[in-house]
Amino acid sequence: MPREVVVAHRADRFLVEVNSGGFDGFFSWERDGVMDTIPALTALGLADTAETLKQAIELFAPDGWPATPEQFEDAHIAYLDDDERSGQVEALAESIMNDSKRIEVATHAYVRAQLSVFEQLDA
Image (cartoon, rainbow, N blue to C red; front, side, top):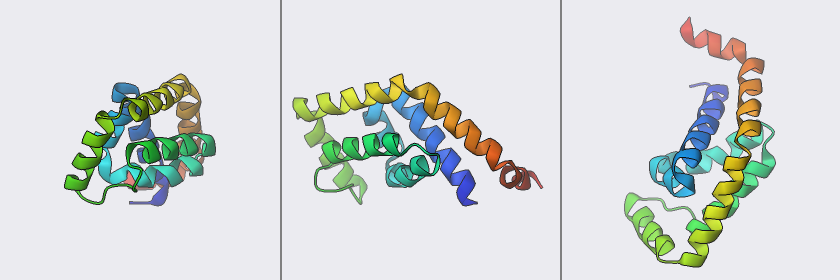
């Protein structure tokens, strides 16, 4: 898959999942793609959004992003049991939700700028 397509896909999944279930939903549904979302957001010119994601990741998994489903489940349980951390992550998710339009506009502009790459997928 071309990098341009992956960038747009990661940004789209990020926005959909955070708006549907906050960072908890994004982390749970997109566990394997979470870390790839940081450079994707940066490629879209959304370094501040990527930084917010990094902050949420650090709060969710202070020892680093879980490498296995079991490690994820352990980190998830610890996160849910920590009201302070989960409250901070919820506030970060709220900031992303409030910024959804700008993220969507940046994603659409990126896709339009890379249209030739996307058109080759249909060829």
